[in-house]
Image (cartoon, rainbow, N blue to C red; front, side):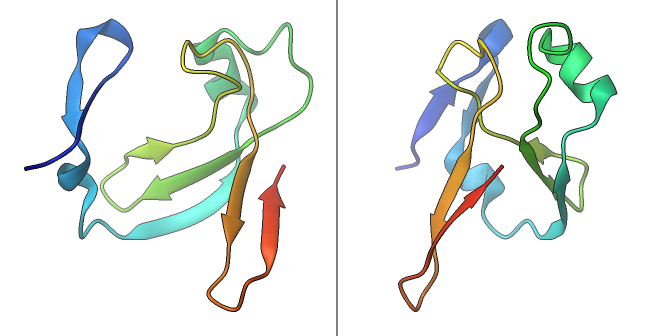
Length: 85
């Protein structure tokens, strides 16, 4: 059974729907994308966007309500810890 998550606007996505999708690019969020989230005026920093080949955009928020930019952390297979800011 998949793990469903309800998104802003009541849309539900099952995590399994992302399985097999390929990353096109990892890049900073654009000003246009920040503005679309309502973050442009209050947040002058940036956050990382993982853009998939089908146009899906994944990016962190500071909380589950989408109140601002977030930082994406990862641990590599050799144990290095990285923060994408």
